[in-house]
Figure (cartoon, rainbow, N blue to C red):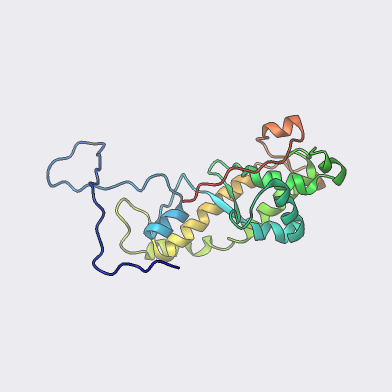
Length: 226
């Protein structure tokens, strides 16, 4: 049986909140608390504003985007081999430096490995043309999901009122700033591909797996949610 919620006044948490300042301040000075290292998606969700030049921008790629390109069945089967629960991990992430999440790269390796090699756990390397072609197609699809946001950005920023303390933008301008930051990161990833005709591209920063060939598929570490 479910426990009934206790009725009555809300009890405030006990204890003290201690904030340490980094610069000297005198009595009466206004103090600002830092929001920490957060991407614009997190800032917009939690606080309702975005920074125009956020160095912590990340981009997520939904599993549905990958499945739409490679096929739902293939994606689900590969995830099962990896021990990856796509219900708990419904997206993949691109880090601020353009690094693709390892679990997405591994998923593509598993999908494109021939059945004979897969039985032996001999997955094709990340740098293979099949993996890189699929990866590029996925990134291009993600770029297309945010197209057209820059055209009205200047007007919205100019119209934005009451910016938060420390700068930034709110409202529609914040939403567009978020999309533009993501677009810039995706373009950075696209530039990391070297065009090689019809064989797709090669990522400029191969992982250790690229040089040693295949390895056994393993369950990737979970992402940190912000």
